[in-house]
Length: 80
Length: 227
Image (cartoon, rainbow over all chains, first blue to last red):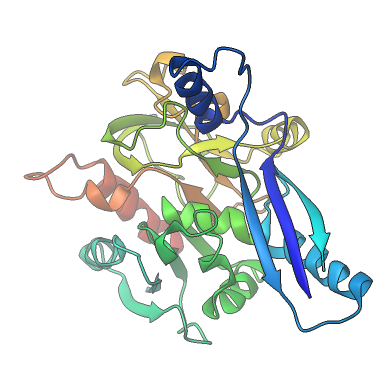
């Protein structure tokens, strides 16, 4: 099963890289861009056929390693 | 007095730390990250560098390496552990220290001497240091200390803030904050004060010809307090 996960900084945490990307986009003429938040994307292949079990394991992986919950949120955005 | 310095793939201040510890009387051993057991030590140091190439988040991969189980047990049994720079990042990723170190506010790698004000001297690391501020060196890209509002209250109440970025006279304000750290925090303890993490490098300030000597003050004091 393939699981897709995104990890983003919490809203309350300043994202200076996102701010710089936003400024660059504005400078390139994309004047209507008013916020950019940068994150991480993971695609994980797991030998588990049961979708809910696989997602449960992915959830544990996020909590233990993929995200730092002090500053980041994670979301499992798909499994197939 | 026995100490151990852990070398991770990508550590680059491990040898400097070894030189500094030996200069002030520690019998130091270098320990590889893939080892299982710590040698008998009164002090364990996680050195600076770029362990595992800073993959995923700084310090996150190193915090899961094999030796860290022994390091965490050592901390829980009251052992003294000091994490400098990347070592600090590793300690917050293990959960032994509160908070996290974000990218510097202005996205620059900072490499310069700074002054830090010692906030808590009631511990073996800073007890008996007469000076209130120390001149130390920082070199980092992710030193912007951050924690939640609840956590900052908690670490304040427990006197866990070890060092603040300041000026020579100990003034703490935005102008003396190099990287955007919340409340100018440069170093923190765990609740029990046996684990210390700090961004500045005392091991780079031990030679009167090359640098200042405030690192020497730190190490001389440390070995005396651990005796």
